[in-house]
Image (cartoon, rainbow, N blue to C red):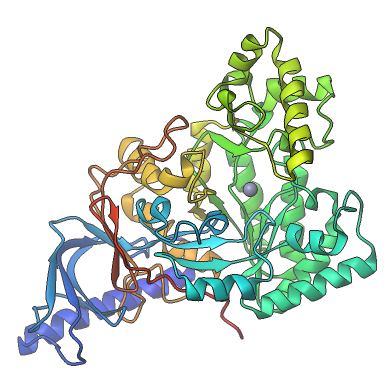
Length: 519
Ligand SMILES: [Zn+2]
């Protein structure tokens, strides 16, 4: 158990479970009032999301809610779903998702539901839909299988105000304009402000701009989530910046996809955690999310903060310290799609040149095409992390699980992050009890996003649920087959409606829009 809120929750769940058992055993008659009849899930181990040990009970679902938990008998007309001894958990909450870019194209959200995810939090890395009211109204008319909540992106509103003239600090007046937009978007129900300070145009902002905007989010009862300003060269400064924002605003702040992504930083997870714990001890509500892979996906240019792809020294440094050529795959390269799936080492060999020159050439060709088409023409997977560091960061009590993935993703994280934690880190590496991992996918995630009534199996909560087989659950997606579906996820319900069954998405689209709870 990691926080007071979760302890309270545990007591409530235990009490409710006890009451459920008591009422049944005393009267022998199940509580079958409140038509229409719902359904009863039996023969399952329940992991309720609070982090406490699994227990056996039946769960009754009516009108999209969990209405009872205990040793419950079947009512007339009630459907019984025999869980076959598998594990029932709250539906997983992905706190850092890029599902927003394709959700209207793929409302089945197969990549999410097939790994047990029932809620995606989008608008991350500083990049969101705008205005959110349009996004929400589109979603209302064309709902997906999954629930959707969004942040409003700093890069999005900075672009709105500065347009193409963004390679500079914003003036006071411009920041005021951004603040105005932000306040409106928070009014629409954004969970908070997200930033992507390693990307354009946010990379050109200074801390005072971000802090001024963060104060607007804090005043509205929002929160802050950040792809921090550097994940490698100036990582320590970047962590100091988000701690400062948490301290100055008093609102919850979250480090997105926390990682130690540079040789120099490897093995320093304990130091990083000590720094975050010290901030928490001083009242800063800082947390993190993480995806369980040693490689990330982004652009070539994110590796070059000066954005100069002719700088051979900077590229040599990158290939030596951050993204070695053998673990550097092209996942998108529009000037020559045949390079997709090849490493920088392989491409350099094809071009009969060295890897530094090959990097420069590829970046230049992609940049030319971007200028012609107005669209990003390249993407890469870079291998920068160590499994042992990931394990330590995953185990930090304030870290929850995310994918950082899209619904159609060239990185396997979009299909396999949650099942990989369950199969690889829990079952194979025995990093933590299954109950702790589920907590980090459900109740802890909900707490970090300010979402109530989800992420927990208790009476009155929304019936977002996943039934899975702990002995077989595993990810199958790889960099070369990023769309392979996971094993071991049996059924997924959203608001009591079945959305995924035996490796297929159903026709139901019960996903709802989740807005920030307004004070
Ligand atoms: Zn990011």
